[in-house]
Image (cartoon, rainbow, N blue to C red):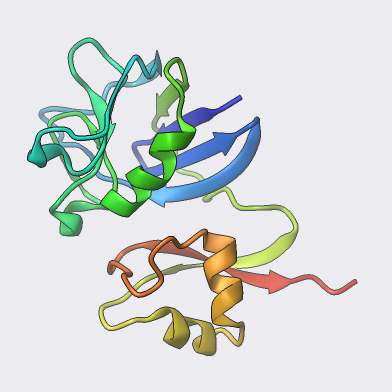
Length: 174
């Protein structure tokens, strides 16, 4: 079963595919005066070509028109900047859009907690900085660019946004 969990406190979206953890994405959430609603919802509408203000994909989860969508303002990711929606980088929403069927549960909560990551790795979380490339980050952490791309399911390796969250794998011995 596919499931989406959004944590307003950590500004992250955790995507589950076939009941298994898939990936964690950084998001923007609602401003204090227009908060992202807490609770359990379901995706009831999808639009692959929404209004430009909603980036490249749209998935509605409340009838008050709250949704999960992309953005052409990537600097807002990681902040409270929306009118109540959950905003992702365009490449991130394009990644989960085809994997999200109508009826997918969307659970929105607010709790300070650690980021969920695959259990078979010792890991570290790294946030992309201006000027970073996949190759520079991989070299910094003594892993290959291919490993970094695979564990983070990076669709466009030559296009990393500052602030994008990456899991740095530390392979366990044995």
